[in-house]
Length: 278
Image 1 (cartoon, one colour):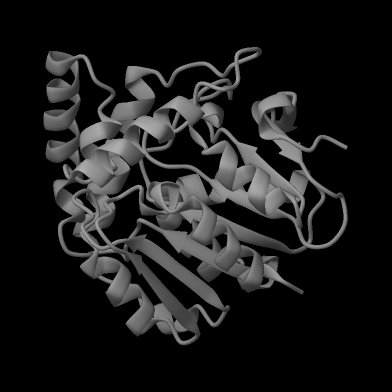
Image 2 (tube, helix red, strand yellow; image 1 turned 90 degrees about the vertical axis):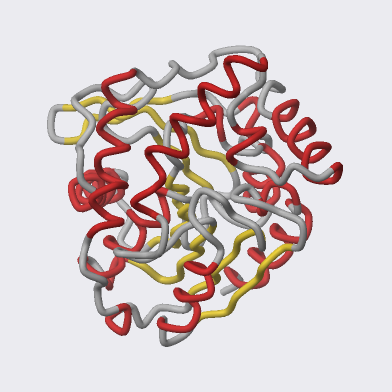
C-alpha cells in the first residue's frame, strides 16, 4: 500500500479508447475520494500534505482529465463535458459511490457530477470554487493571463499572485506550498499544453456566464472551503454556495486567497477527515 503521494506511481486507465493518467494511495477500503483539479492543474499540482493527510483515512485517487497532463485526447471546452469524462473515469475504475474533492475548476465539475449522477456521490468538498453564473467567474481568464504575465516578468510562479494574498503571511505560505509541489522528483507529470489551457479557460468563462443552476438539487452533505480574500473566484461565491446548498457547512480562512486550503492545510485536512468520516 502506497502511503505518500510523493511515491505514488503514475498509472493509466483506458476510458472509452482514451488513456487517462492517475495516481492512487491509501487503504483500499471504504468510499474512495476522487480529487478534481484546478485550472492548469496536473497530478503534480496537488499539495502532498492534503493528499497524504486525507489518504491516511481514505483511498485517494487523483487524475488528469482528458487532454490534461499525461492523459490523452482533446481537452473539453465545457464544464459539462469535463464532468462526463470524470464520471466515465470513475465508473471504469469500478466505483459505485465516491466522495469528491473539487478545487476551483474541479469544484465546478464536481457540482455537475452531483447533479447528473447523484447516486454516484456520497459527499462533496468544494474548495475555492463557485456556482454557475457566480460573481466574477467570467473574469478568471483576464485575471489569469494578467498574473501569468506578471509572474513571467518577476520570475515567479503565477500561483504567488493567483492563489495567495500579498501579505507577509500569504507570501510565506506561497513559498512553502510551491516548495512542497517540488518534493516529488521522479516520474513527474507532463505540463499542461497551451491548447488544453485555452479550452479550460473557455469552459470557466462560459460557466461564469451561465444562468445559475438550482443548487437545491444537490442534496448531498457539502463542505465548502476557501480563503476570505480569493481574487480568482471571489470568496462571496463560497458564501453563496453554502447558503444555497441544502446541507452545507462553510469554512473561510483568514488572510488567505484562492489557495486557502493549501495555506491552512493542517486545519483543512482535519476538517475534511471529520466531514468524510463514515
